[in-house]
Length: 613
Image (cartoon, rainbow, N blue to C red):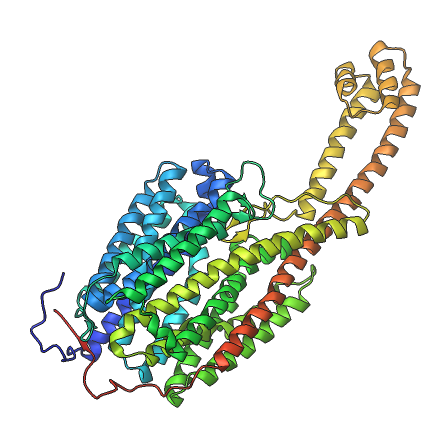
């Protein structure tokens, strides 16, 4: 821990432009570290599952464990940063994250990896919250929009680099190295951040509200687990429960108890973890409510889109990652431009509303124009529009809340938006994942009947809040398999009826799928009573029937694939259609935000933060 400051408590630490640049680089590396981890692990998930023999029911816990632990500690880290300094908190979080990454790399079974991923989440929760708080300490709100826009671009960059790096490492080394790469990146980031002063609120006093933290954990963890594990129709052996099961209802009951106890504790506490009086601040309350809804739309747009690219367009996982690059570039460009515009004009609300209008248009385009025949180029263009709408969502709401509260509450302001965005994303993905599964199953049954086929059966265990399909059936692969299977049958039948091969004849007789008529002929071959001429005539008829059957199988396969792609497209379109409503709600809430001029410094003209060495 840094030494006590010898400067006056109201003196701003002298931080040169060069030092600020170095600190900002460390912050960017910290954000990249946390964001990359998610996308890299997602890419390597199938390899991890195969190597550690993780069942489908436990597979989702690789993400659930991290998500639950990182979400619940966000407000706690925010308060600790205000009291004891950002440097101390982010260095602790990064050290824990790096240590847990090393433990993840040496995990020997599913249980240990899940536990270490949860431990990693405890450290990761400090990265995002404290990083944005450090930026708030170093830059006044009037300059912060540009910086936050750049930080928002880091999230987009990670969605490009993550799948590429994760795929390369997994294919050429092993999945263990996707965790080990966190070590050098994290140590470099720590080296930059270690040189910064220990910025903290000069006005913050008191102690950590451990009682409030306890009840927050009691409320949030059961809620997140219930939403992650609840399913309309869980499969046998799957780690999931029906929404009406005692486990899920009990989770919601614990959430209600914990929430009531948390509110009562905070009202009585002299040093609350979250001062509920902040919700009287209209900007604080409305911005956090808006980001709760928009968090669901943000994650849904990012997570479900690659499923469409793989299962409908037919790309590989790596190809899907490359195709989403335009979305990322649109997101980065939008985040930076929105930050520059906010700084130039000193107003954030028009930029927010404009971005949400673009986002609604993008959701409408995706929700009403996607088809099973959509091409890679077509979807790529639409992704760019989606990215342009998402950019401002990442950074400006945090800026609005920071600007609305006194500087000594920067940690709480930053952690609140992070917390509500993550909560909104988790709740939204749980609900949208259920809608997606139900839509795909319903559409499959309808389309199968229309095509004259029996309804296809889909197994869709969830993955990171979204249903994880076993993979789209490739028509070319199925056709090759059908053709190869019929070719084997032809070869076997020709051997039997041309040369009188009794061994193959006996094998066909034992096959329950052999027709009674063919069995009679085969019996003649085995007994030697069928003449060569009769064998030739029989072979001609059998091959003709086989050709008809092959054409029928190929036609049925083509219809089945189209049914699958059509049903999957219906599911994706439904998500974006619901997304329009979610973004519209966020738009109306944002429209109610008061427009507060961005501060160029402390409100009273005095420095707001003290620093330690």
